[in-house]
Length: 230
Image 1 (cartoon, rainbow, N blue to C red):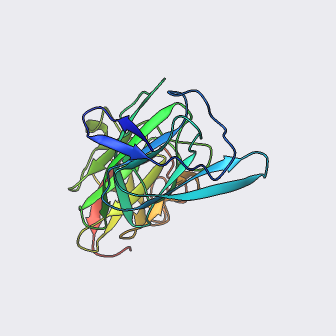
Image 2 (cartoon, one colour):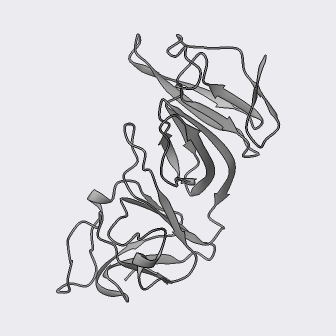
């Protein structure tokens, strides 16, 4: 067993058993996950020699990567949002949250998962880009209340969201509007749901209003909680 001293945290044990070929040998430029979430998480990396994913469990209090493997992704349970601290070479932005599903870890990053909220914190989350096997957004923002103008938040998030998640604590849906002040056409995201690539989600409500049938990617100006979509 080896240990990693995470800045601001206790000593963290790291597993010494690698089940796949070493793909990273330079500490500090390999993708690393440090798990302080209080629950076991799943991590994985792509093995070039077999052209397949290798997946492992990572218990809370442990880390993986940074010396023998380049961790590519961490799995956050669907309906949950992870609170994260992101560091490493070239890190920029204010990425503080990861959405549900497999989330990209950059090769130069150390990502500490400090907690996980599952359908109970009452926020709607947005990221400035899409999430997939190749992409990780750089900034994130969240809202607890209705907001008539996303231009006032997180350094101006109006027309900036590329992915979204609804973490409602009361089973509410959330409307996303084309214009400020809840005007124009709107899209609706159900409780616990996530849109990881908003290029394929649309302003599908409000026929005849500005923005109707357009993709919501980088076009959301305001948001409002509603009991149901409609």
